[in-house]
Image 1 (cartoon, rainbow, N blue to C red):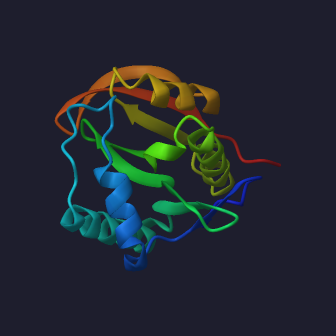
Image 2 (cartoon, one colour):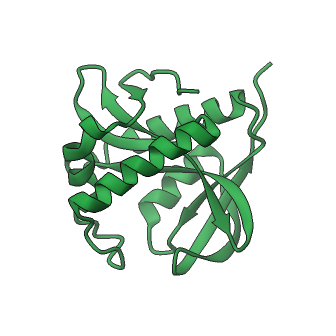
Image 3 (cartoon, rainbow, N blue to C red):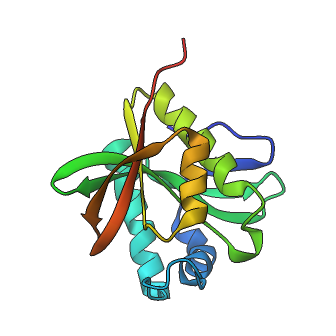
Amino acid sequence: MLPEPTARLRFRPMTMADLDDMTAVLSAPDPVRVDRPARSRDDAVRWIEWQERNYAAHDFGLWVVETHDGEFVGDCGLTVQDVEGTPHVEVGYHVMPGLRRHGYATEAATAVRDCAAAAGIEHLVALIRPENLPSQGVARKLGMHVERTAHVHGGSALVLGMRLHRAS
C-alpha cells in the first residue's frame, strides 16, 4: 500500500538511506510541543526500524514525503496506536520546520486518508496534544472531530477521529 501522488508530493517507503533527513525532522525544535525532547540520530534509527516493522506487519507505516523534484518534506502515514488498551489506526506526520505552514501536512494527510479508505480501514484517528492547534487544524480539514481525550504516550491527547468509506 502506498498513497497516490498529489499535485506537489509523492510518497515512498522509508529506509536507512533517509537517516540524515529523518534525524533532521525528528530533532527539529517544535514550538507547539515543548514537552517533546529533541530526538537523536539513534532515535531516528529506531524510528526507521519501526517503520520497516510496520510495513512488514501491516503493509503501511509512515512514508517519506517529498516534492516531485525530490526535496525531502517529512513523513506521513499510518501506524497502529494503543489508545488506553484499544488499537487504532492513526494518521501521523512530521514536516521540516522551513516547510511548515505551506499546506504540505494537509495535502499529505489527505492522500494518506484516501489510501486508508481504499484499503478498507474503517476508522482513522489522530492523537494530538491539546496545545497543538496546527495539527488539530490539519485533522479537522481531513474531516475529523474530537471523539474524546485519552492518556497516550505519557500525556493527555485529544483523539480526533472519523469513519472512512471505500470509494465506489
